Length: 328
Image 1 (cartoon, rainbow, N blue to C red):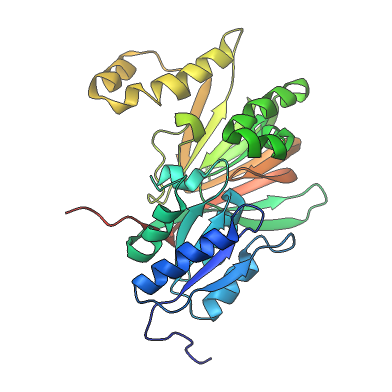
Image 2: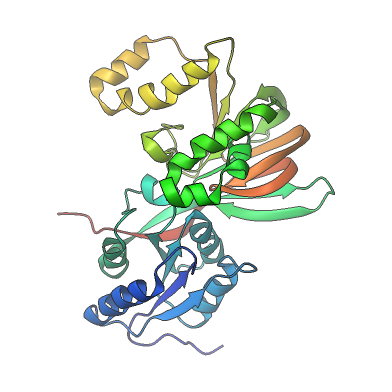
């Protein structure tokens, strides 16, 4: 196959036409490419049938040096999945409500111009991808990548029940309404799980989340030890016990993880405090879960329907992401 790359770097933009103002985005990207002396950018729209994987494959074949993923978390996840192991970098142009990867990598979430500037002037950071093989109730198997979190139970039901119109109006706060809509169908998830080939253990939890990163919208830090480049996945199970169980969980992720861990004194307070057993953690490079009954499943904030088992593992260093240049 001939080498389609030119002497000039070339940017490709994979954009969600529902999420972005295409005219504004083209103006900013084309100007940035010209200023950086790059080739004319190439453009690919996502569709209902192709959330970004096929478009990204076309971008790679046409010699893209970098692919700008312009849209919500679903577009970013799809582009990353197609870039897995390619060596071609991804730049995130956030235009969604969660903007999960951007928040975890401290990338802009509200300024398109800043995001585009990083694409053309930044540096590459190598991170891991989480990979899952899910088994449907009919025994069909699917493999997908995720950047931030995969989960089943309450969080997946919340995403399924969140209004898309409300998300457009109030952003990530719409998930609070999704939680309220999910409470009537709230049932504990019964499952067996194994970490790195260890014997299966039984667990009953309201939510089980596998994380490549640890931060959620609103400053919530669910998995404080999760790092996107350590070759390890983190698992958090929410197991509310008694009348104050959910309050303990909220205190753990909002106050202890989100506030106290940011200071030396706060970390000392945590060390002296009794551990909250309503949130349970595990880490490993390979995780297996088999649920007693099919459960709703989500990847990076997108619903993926019912599954009866999940096999998740880390693919270390599988993706390059463009981040701001380090200050000297």
